[in-house]
Length: 144
Image (cartoon, rainbow, N blue to C red):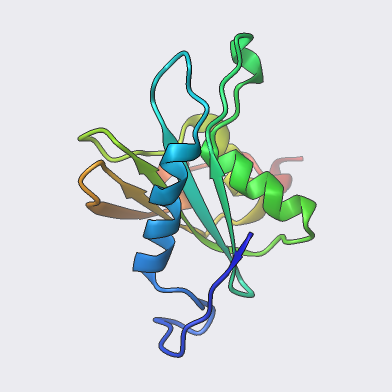
């Protein structure tokens, strides 16, 4: 878990800069355990109080046991008592932007349907979305 703070946050609830969050996500690429896909992903999740949780993807020979970087970061945060998320950065090494899979989008929807999702490619270029753009009509508690 990382704790960043900044005197000059870009909005009231953000305590880290976008660049700091992007660097934290990219730093996780080298921690990914990827013996099967060789496709590293890193993530950095910013909570409303400014706390940042990072994650990487962790693969398993039983593929269903594999977990994505985004869910690693989210589950770490939830296990430490955090539930209010502002934004997440997802970093990859490919030419394309590293976008979250459907399972990760659904987990994000559970906690922060309006969260900003920043996707990086291997050149460090970013594309930003609102979660609802990536998962329109997402399943949430209102459907139950």
